Length: 112
Length: 114
Image 1 (cartoon, rainbow over the protein chains, first blue to last red):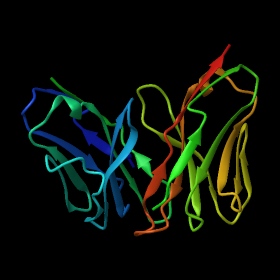
Image 2 (image 1 turned 60 degrees about the horizontal axis):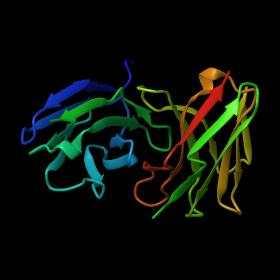
Image 3 (image 1 turned 180 degrees about the vertical axis):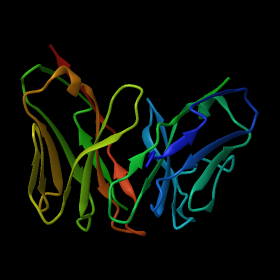
């Protein structure tokens, strides 16, 4: 298995633009997580899905952030409009019930 | 909900010394406690985990201990090497919800000086 796949690996955009981050979880995993990591705030859980259904989105900063999981092998995290304070590394992770989470390589987002 | 506190935030040791990182959790129903290592510019990766039915687990130079009564768990690294330098995160499974979510500590930056 290739592990959790994320794209793009790096994204540089201008304030106000829409940003879409993509994730392919490990096949067979029924949980998918989106995290944001910054020096100031550490590793923050934004939202997680179980069997493609959003379970907890209380970590989503505001309405500019949205996430979808249309099927078991794909998820997106969208920021619209983006702001400089959204600059961070965004990780996607997946797991099967009761087992460890495997992280993807992350997407480094820079909003100018 | 579950809350995880991690100490210290930074730790510097000489090569060959031991390093200990401690975490506390708030919900006594938590039953799974993993530790992740994140090297600079890389993703967090699991290095060891422990479940609530055991008190200690070892894997070569790494060990984790769990005290359920006190609700704390610790990571012990012996004979530290420069390649152990990284940020270490503890986590506890949130017993609420659907049993998949982990609550992470803020991380400990370990520096091993040669």
